[in-house]
Length: 310
Length: 289
Image (cartoon, rainbow over all chains, first blue to last red; front, side):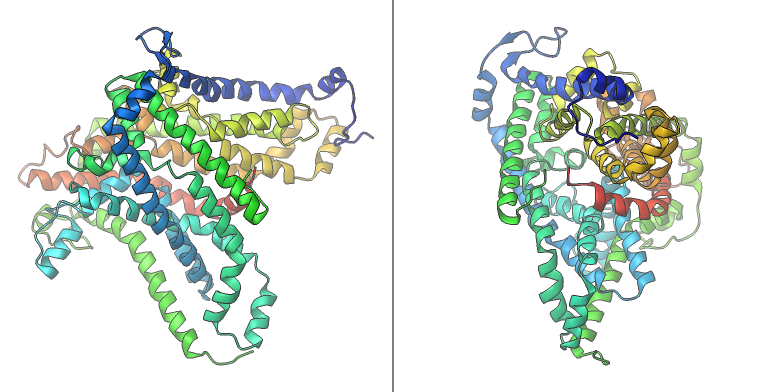
């Protein structure tokens, strides 16, 4: 009988003859990866080349750093860059701790059926399309018939506010809808980490007379700290990738001061105004910052927790 | 063990239940409100009487959207994209994940690197757009389907799941005379329902909710329902013209709500059935490559 896992140095020819079917399976997926992942990656050279309509996706001639020089002088870019940073940092500060708190509290619910019910319902917003989320938002916040304005007017006598159009509410609305959509979902990871804690710890603490609040502070939270660290690092790595579709859907000319982020800038200059090379350069610039953030946060994770994400 | 609850335990319980009920309300109220607006009497909506529950029953909005040819068309398109897109994605992801789960296979490490690198650095919006147009996929339904055949996170979920299956099964199947395609179809796939259901759900939700790719690649009659909804919301598509005696804008709100409800309902009904799978899939498969 032969063993599948043998790591012999059998000749390549024999190896392929034995496993040729496994290689055949990979053919289509590998072609897919080359065409749809790696060619667009190479397509980023467009940031250094001039594009001419109808002349292929890689542009026509080298122009060096022309477009990058233009980016750094472009006030619209710096505004988008600042908006991206402010929005994602705000999002991180608010929406990083909330799922942890939710998971810890949900874990304390002793009625199992109720716990399961809350969990199921809390996942629901994650499955809703961004379009539907923004559409619902538009109705809830509508100045004429919206629920919130009705409430504010009838209780506090406040004049109806056009929330979706006022720049000062944009970030709050963006962040809170993210809270609404992803709290339950993100909490799954923390709940799994809490479930992994040995019950003996809680029982011992309970015998020693620790209250449940004390158990949360001294057992639950310290035990999930490694998970929290990994998630934090993951989130820092993703700092520049905001929910582009939601921002695009919430974008109005009057809130553009705060709602124009890097991705919407790429979309506007690239697809709407067809400045392909310039938009590619903007995209590439934020992509490179993204890679630096991910790799350095991963290195940091390895140093602190002894474990990276990849 | 302590028999009696201390004051701090009682306070904690009260806080927990308040928080949980708040979470339930926050998650449910928007849907209940949308539903109420979609079936309430237009007069009650104009007078801001609908606070949460429907007032007067009026199915006019639903009757209108079901008579609206574009809505039906868009809905059918979405079902098509979801069914075909999910099928392609499951086949392609499985085909790649199975050989990738064999660490003895030469080149497996290299192929895995190919996948991981593409997760961290990708062509942006413009290179992708130009690729699709130079492949002449723009304006065809394939632009909605093929570029999303494999998602790297889903691939890794499957690879990890296949790795966790006992190797003896495969050895036995080989001795019984099955080849690797046979093993994949007759042994591995039937054993992988949880992982395939998880990945299938993620992919189906992606295709069902996608609108942006429709916007940049497709023509109007190919639009998915979410793009139809988006065009109602931003006023590109006008609805509620045939409202008759009632206020136009109010009817438009009811119709918008009815579209939101009907286009969201299938996913909301589906996901609780797959919950036990995806909770496991997310915690076992994700993050770690």
